[in-house]
Length: 199
Image (cartoon, rainbow, N blue to C red):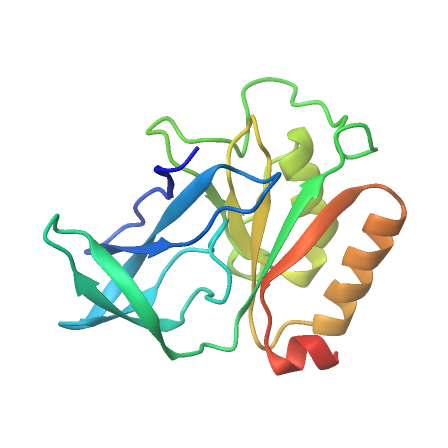
């Protein structure tokens, strides 16, 4: 189904939404646009403030160029500067050990009341995912790496991790591969740097 879009919760401060258009993948979410919050830097550039769930080739803190359409939406036209961050998306295998995680109450890291995504901070900055649910279990498996990110929804607990350039890339890749081999999760790299691919 075309014409569906993914929106993220607005972070604090004065932000604009940058929209990305793409061709949906077969067997994946039926969206063809994703809106990411960004900080405007110039009249036609902005720094991305979210971790994308669907858009490949862009990461948090990247600077992108955009044009404003007649509908007032700011449409990305390309990446101007790469931040060095990577995007890794992980979802627990529904029948696997993490997919059966109990929530013990309301979704701790699910869709926020406003209908957007929920975020969790880097452990190093004091943020962490609360216990409960598959998304929290996935986040817990990576908490030692201090990654931040977002969760698509409690119904579809896809975790999009922001992987900074100074993160333990080799350790994260080993954890991803081990979890996939053990049937804990599926993952994909939405945006990888040369350092990521060579780690």
